[in-house]
Amino acid sequence: MLAFVLTPRHEGPEVDRMMVENDAKALFKAGGEKRLGNYEKTFIRIFSERSRAHLAAVNSAYHTLNLLRAVKKETSGNFEFALLTILRCAENPGMSSFAALQRFEHPAKADGSLSFLVIGDWGREGFYNQSEVALQMGRIGQQLDIDFVVSTGDNFYDDGLKGVNDPAFQESFTKIYTSKSLQKPWYSVLGNHDYRGDAKAQLNPILRKIDSRWLCLRSFVLNTEIAEFFFVDTTPFVDMYFIDPEDHIYDWRGIYPRQSYLVNLLKDLELALRESNANWKIVVGHHAIRSVSHHGDTPELIDQLLPMLKANNVDFYMNGHDHCLEHINCFDSRIQYLTSGAGSKAWRGDDKKHNHCAVHYFHDGQGFMSVRLNRTDASMVFYDVFGERRYQWNASRQLHSVM
Image (cartoon, rainbow, N blue to C red):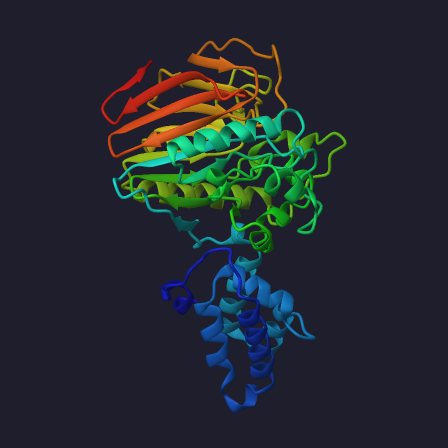
């Protein structure tokens, strides 16, 4: 266990299939050579040096025997416990009490600036003006020379993907966002509609072989030198999906036991936020913390997530879920709540009052958001389906102001 904790490794989602096969064969052979005394070195080397995604793939590829069962058969005592713990955490990172959020690096431009687009609730095979929004994203993306795109979830309607070979992945993503400026990484989280399908399919690195732009995990950290982004899996927080799912079937693999999953996620997030020295701290989730649109505030996030964001001086919370564009801030913290969930189908005339916060902007039509950052200044713009600027807001590390 100590070797696993102390050994540096890349914890990305990529998996080398050839290495997976070789490791599976080596473990199978080591089990048969137990009496020769070599098996421990093989198990320790592979279990300590490989990523969680890699170990999960090895477990799937292990020949003739289930790897968990093999570990139980061929090892014992503390050694057995350590290997089983590592393997179970590889299969279900939410169970890990020592696994930090996976981290990715995306350097800012040479001049220290960063620009990106934010879009949510989009995947409808081009319908409901998805294609029109995508066209304008490409135009604005070229103007701003964007570095990447952030997707706030509900990536594929109505019920996520059916599997890694579901044609909806290409019909709603690859064939829609075709502009040259959008051929950049798409950093994505899952939404509630994504959980209604095969949620693990969207997390599978196989999709990156179909379209190399795609990177979707439940929760992770993106470091861009001047800003750190903390992507949070918000769907498991919402009680309704568990208590009253109506006719929907949710894919909760990797989430149960739910309470343990949430406790560990919040623990890992708090550690990442506390250790961050970034100029800007940006949290991305699917569900709104504050909203005046159809779904409104999310009480579970206000109770469980918001206190942590306040305590760690988060600057922006970006979300989708409500099919609109919003800018809200409340009087009890510096956090700016920015909804960009208007990537396709929108809800006209569906808004409500908010008694505790200031609503600076609300648009109940389709559109998207752009963000430009440097070390001291930030600029956000909301665009409608025609690519027209509807609202701009500038901020600095010293002062937030509305324009």
